[in-house]
Image 1 (cartoon, rainbow, N blue to C red):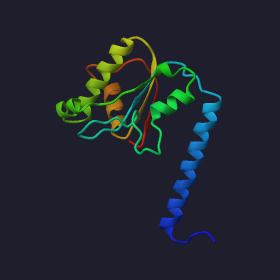
Image 2 (cartoon, rainbow, N blue to C red):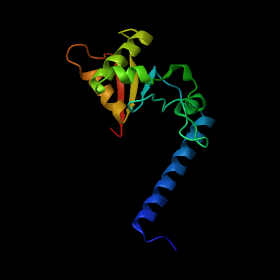
Image 3 (tube, rainbow, N blue to C red):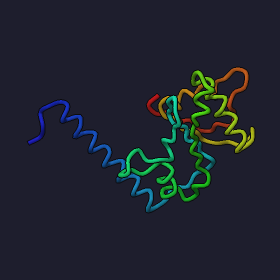
Length: 149
């Protein structure tokens, strides 16, 4: 009999969505996706070292970078940006982080190469700030995806 408690129903829904997402990742790993251009993954951040894309949250999980190695036929085009503790200490807001993001993208690709970018949480605000900056916008963005911003 299905649970009638709304909290249990929510937990059950989340468990199913996680299982479905994992099944999709595993399917992509069998027939890898090919990136059309460089893709930057920009994590949400806090006031300390943030390596959300590159270090699994628990021993039972797999990092996004590890999944990229399995899922992309050309994982060398996937860039997982992290902000260091020094970066965090030097930044007062996502506007400051956007300058670091612009600098890193340009250092890796130059100013003229097209790329895609995905920002999660506060990383989405950082991406948005970098792209719409009036004085020095981050150019070359072909596709921009902001998740849970």
